Every structure is written in structure tokens, then in C-alpha cells.
Image (cartoon, rainbow, N blue to C red; front, side, top):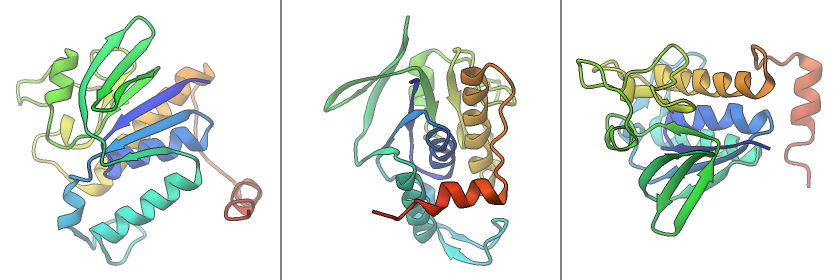
Length: 194
């Protein structure tokens, strides 16, 4: 089974984790909890009338946990590098390997720069529509690829785009994460059952 490491636990990182884990990829999220969402209150997120940013994050965290995401809360990533087999992510606890890397660290683009990703003239990470960087199988989401266009729903969409591109590569054909009511009952009917 392929593996995905996501650096960052805001809307972009957790959205990517949700899609990859839900569809069978081993997914780890390293999260120092430095997201701007703790300063936010959402009134403009589709489907949500009003929610505190921290409450929203807890909901996302619970959701990805239900799909088996390995959340490394409070663990800082100090380095990333590309290898012949994928990527190595370094933390104080050691090194972690993955086939795919999703960077979701907000406007902090240091890890993307250290990895050797190309940047735009606006000093943002140069990504395509799938959020893939100039480094194959490495993605940069949310504020990393946008100059001052930061919004939770945009970031979540960027995370989803990265995840769907990873899943497309894994499946060998365009992948769409779309469930019908019978699928949802089958998938969610067993969640929460011990």
C-alpha cells in the first residue's frame, strides 16, 4: 500500500488526509497546531452557518481519525527530502518515509524551498491545478501556492485536489471520490461501532 505524509493540520492538510485515508492509502499527518484557524470564526464556509475555527478543526480531526489517519499531533517536521523511493520526512523522533508528500504549512514555505520546489515571481510555490509542485509526487496546498488569497474553503479544496491527484496516480485512471447513499450507509454504518 502506498503511503502519504502530510505536513500541516489545517483545512488543507486534513482535507488531503481525509480523501487519501478514506480511499485506502496509509496516511500520516504531522501537525504542530499552528494553523490560523484558531483565530478564525467561519461564516462563509459552504454548508456551515457559523462555527468557531478551533471547533471546526476538532470536527476535522475527529473525521480523519475515523478513517484511520495517523495524526502526529505536536510533532514538528524539521526537514524533507526527495529520495529514489519517494520522500523522507525528518522530525525530532526520527525519519519517516512516504511515497507522496503534501505540504500544508500555510504561508511558511521553508520546507518547499528546502525540498527544491520551484517558486513563482510572487514568492509562492509554483503548483499546477492538482497542487503538484515541480517535484514529482510532492504537493503544496493552501496559502503555500497563493499570494494573499487565503481562505479555509480554498485551502480545503486545494488539499482535496492534491489527494485526488495522488489517488488518480495510484488507480491509473481519473479518480473521483463520490459516494451514493448505499455507499455512505455501508461506509458510515460501521463507523463508531466497536
